[in-house]
Image (cartoon, rainbow, N blue to C red; front, side, top):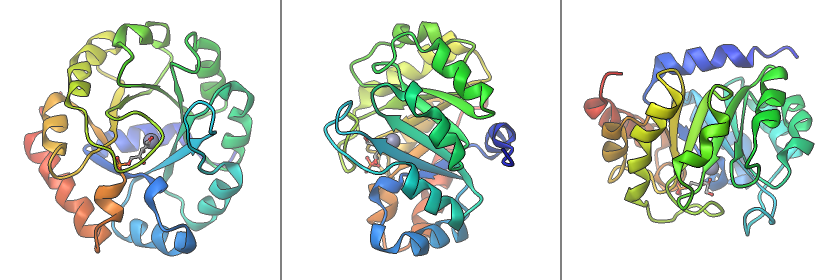
Amino acid sequence: MSRNSLATLELIRQEVPVIAPSMLKCDYGNLQRDIQLLDDAGTRLYHLDVMDGHFVPNLSYGPMVIERMRECTDVTFDCHLMISNPEKYIGEYVKVGCDWLTIHIEAVPQPQDVLKQIRDAGCGAGIALNPGTPVSALAPAVGLCDVVLIMSVEPGFGGQKFQPAALEKVAQIRELFGPEVLISIDGGIGPDTIQAAAAAGVQLFVAGSSVFDQPCYESAISNMRSMAQSVMPSL
Ligand code: DX5
Ligand code: ZN
């Protein structure tokens, strides 16, 4: 593998707070143009939502589309796998150029082997949890992952309302996983919600509607980043 995906974890850590555009909400008819605009806007991390119509009630895209996205940019790809049996597909997503692979604890309650499989492939390993899942369910992932993704909506669709109860999990995750893990949040993040999340200690912010529904991606991203930066606690 030619990409140094593990190195991207450290690079992203230095860039915190990071806004990661969720490509679920992009203009698929103009994928190349949207990626160019986002790269020009200084995007450091793309959030790629993979849905299988089984683990979540929606279907999005898979390796073939990601492969074409990869031809358009060198920026880090965090692939959010909302799929059952992710262990069967890790190799394919690594091959098409994903740097981080985030699996769901609800899909793999004992995720040790899959997380090791991801790291052994040279990628960053992430674990995600749904709004109804307690942080204690993540205990088997401690020491085996680089990113924890808190869902602040039910996974499956963009444009849903932020669930503030998700923020109660941030301190619990920091305590369970220690200082190194990157904490990310996904769902309903925008100018009205990003500061509460940043103040709680979130470092990476997935943003779909709040970027793609705006006429200028660059100002939407830089505005949210400044808002997060101004309230972020120092670790
Ligand atoms: C939802 C996805 C999100 C979604 C975010 O299942 O995981 O990444 O696209 O979209 P917004 O920011 O519109 O809530
Ligand atoms: Zn997502």
